[in-house]
Image 1 (cartoon, rainbow, N blue to C red):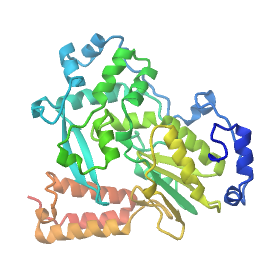
Image 2 (cartoon, rainbow, N blue to C red):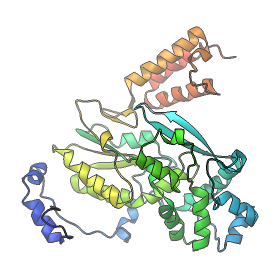
Image 3 (cartoon, one colour):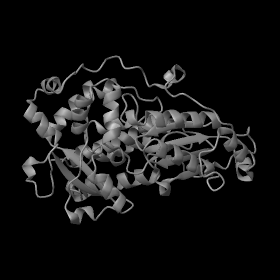
Image 4 (cartoon, rainbow, N blue to C red):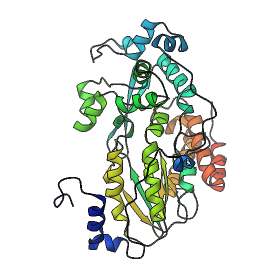
Length: 386
């Protein structure tokens, strides 16, 4: 298509190209031919996709001085927390607002957690609770939404012939200054106030060279720019607000194809029963993601049929939301060893509240499979806890 039409083609040209494609015809062999529709995502037609209209309005803040007063800060303190001056690896630790934690992921890559220090975290939590919770999010968003969870996300895709999952690459790190500032501008805040709000909610990472080398070049570039820090209270909410249009567009795509769509944080899922070669979805979804400022991690794309294990966010969805057997067995083995050899014998990562951590994992299993959860609880009661 791009080779034949280097300039932007008309809608009719695109439709004719798709209609003449044998591959596209094979994708839709048992369904109506594809068509092009033009939709205004800001129209009233789409208001029904909002996950509950906010019952409160954000506070009125007209000036930077008002903003400082709202946060109970002086103007110099506000400037300090906004971190407009230059900070690098030589800056004393007490002048930095974030602490870093490097975690090893199962695939061998490194995950960076950017944890704001106590005072900044309190400011970010106030912005989240009183401003960000008043913004609209799409009903397809399930991550970090009141009354929703990974379980509600998975429940949308049970008993389906096909379950497709896609992963947004470096989701928080890909969302930068301009996207965040646009959120506050659209909420009605003046430019200067929006600038300070954005400064408090974003962060530019300053890591030692040895630590930066653990990430590839593209990720290092994202980390050095102002982005949503993974570990800050407002980052999940801002992600849902910024991906509002993405959810609109993917919901529309799913509806046209007779599929279910939902998103949990950076995990995108579609499912359906119509027999079709769904590999055509990946470039479509990838293109929409690029248009909305994020990218897909194509290595994590999965298409699973009903005779295979269909998993979303670690939950098996073939017949009903259920715990993965391997996860259950691993947790059961950990609990058994704790009962035999003591709690700390299994605390290999030096978790400060390991007993509570194990109990939380048991309650998660219980929410998915009550019978298995009760079995784990029985073993847990045999663990000697000082």
